[in-house]
Length: 253
Image 1 (cartoon, rainbow, N blue to C red):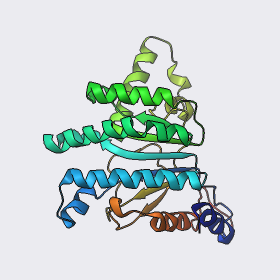
Image 2 (image 1 turned 45 degrees about the vertical axis):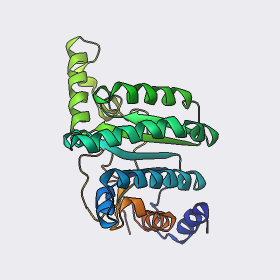
Image 3 (image 1 turned 90 degrees about the vertical axis):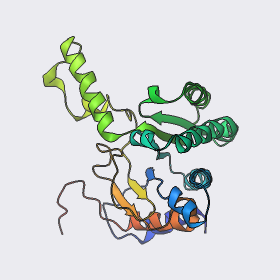
């Protein structure tokens, strides 16, 4: 059964009138280091295997006609890890951008990035900007990498920008509502995620998309990210369509 067929099957068997078409999947790709330890490999080897898993999930989203995929690639807290691991992750990012830009173009994938990019090394930042520019007109899937990203940091930066605009009178304080605030977020113009997947058995948001995940369905699996395969993705889809989505409203019997 293909991913598209799995989605259609899940849609057909749901009894929930509030079920919403799955359009945006967010993923906390957790467990690379524990996978590496389990297999007696280095942490960077685990991250390399995790990069392959990401490529597979991009393929699943394309097959399922899911238009948005946002992944927690490198948190702002990850800068505190040891230098060898951080350098390895930055090199892995560079190689991914360098080697996969052609594949992204061939499959109509638009690359996007959120987070504080000023903290990224120059080489990685330049390559990232290059691929984002090259793929900006692709429309099959938007792959957003959360790099040097933290939800609290994003909200703090939003508050600072809003305060500055109110101070210089380009924004009126009494005009600020949800839509105005969202226009200042890194994710401005993006739909909120419908489904969050977190691997490796951990059950927390870890400072990821704190505003945007307010009404997302959360799916947790014990599987380490490098082992997250098509069967696991289908389980997440099936779980999503079994949920009753209320968005804070009461559903009458």
